[in-house]
Length: 563
Image (cartoon, rainbow, N blue to C red; front, side):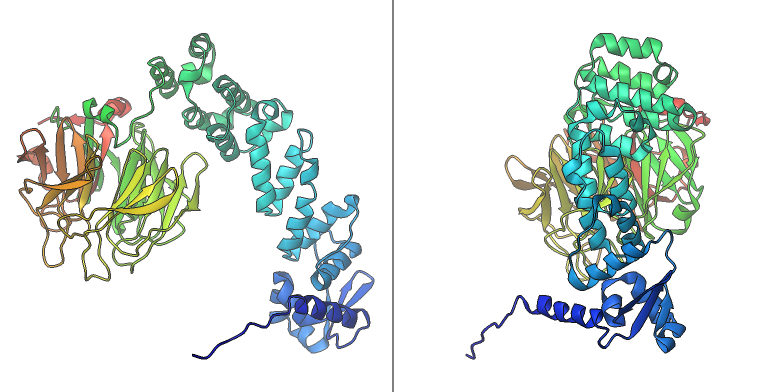
């Protein structure tokens, strides 16, 4: 076998650029003259184009510069010394700048798209990061896109929240940053300090900021407030007492430190839930309460939900919708007058049915669906900060797997690859360590099944095995690490939804032949039975469904239709 050796000179590039810098200073082989005011700089166009996006774009299309070898630089609020420093940095990678000149220089470097120079300048302010300089450094880093310095400022703000919230400049922060500071788990300040800071910030511009108050207050563990302070809020603070949502939050806090329940919690089994059906025929969300049999027509679907495929999840009193075009919408469904709100788009395309799932207080979109090819992409939406971030990728690329969350783990169940092989695989993400692993495979290979957590077990229903839709049902017990087969459904279904409600598991819809049918599984008796919808609902075409809390529907003023 032929052997190889590696020959490397780590000083080569440094030596070459030193020589090029000497060429510049002696005007040797310079092919471009830059004029700034009355000052001229001889440079090499290739060096500037390779180092600065600003010069690259300018020289690519500038016919006059290409023919004459001369350009006049017109940069906003430019000074000659800063331009000289930028050119020196491009050639040498280091410059000496006075403290007083840093602000001018970072402004010019930003316009010339020299991000590395901007980062270096911003870094020099960190050794002076303290209460009196925090807001200046934070704004500087944000203005000039210096991410590392921004992150250091964020850490400083979280560690010193109590002190920072008492400074006048705190009241000038935008809503997204206030939501981040107050809602972050890294903010160890007392809950009372957080509430006081939120009230002060909101009252500073009450007309514009009152709309953010509830959503940010919701991120605070109000059960940690002194009882006397909670009573004070209800009695004396109009922001709280005039809002039904805020009053409800305070009242719930008197019950103790109870975490808002998610799909995986036993607490949910005793709650009164309804099923929200996205009906393509009426183009409305129709609500069916399995316990009472009552039906309600709620909000109209957004046009993008009529013309595109989508998925939806619900968290607290908000519905989130994810479309095939990467668009994201939200709706506060307890408000009868609410309208759909456009949120930031997802980074990646996740196919016609983006696999979204609630994980604690965030929304994960894990993997892709048809017609995308196999992907491992995972991204996270933070409702408090209203931003998307990339997460750790899945282990195996595939399409049409179904996500569900339970007790610290995100499960991605089944799937297929390129419309061929169906998988029995189930990947699991440990949220605490953000590492993926596999649990034992299912008994049946399937793509696009419905998945639901009931009494801590993972139930998998239906799906597609390639040539046909499935009726098969099985469940996984995390304690025993074993899959068990259950009684099959009455109808084959795939790309549908399942929910646990009142000791039953409901299977809702089907993307092909049974779009308006429901059936429920009595877990105790091990039997399936059909669910009869009111006659005026039989013509529905259910394109998606979610489970919502019936108790939160009391403010919806639409007419309730009873069978």
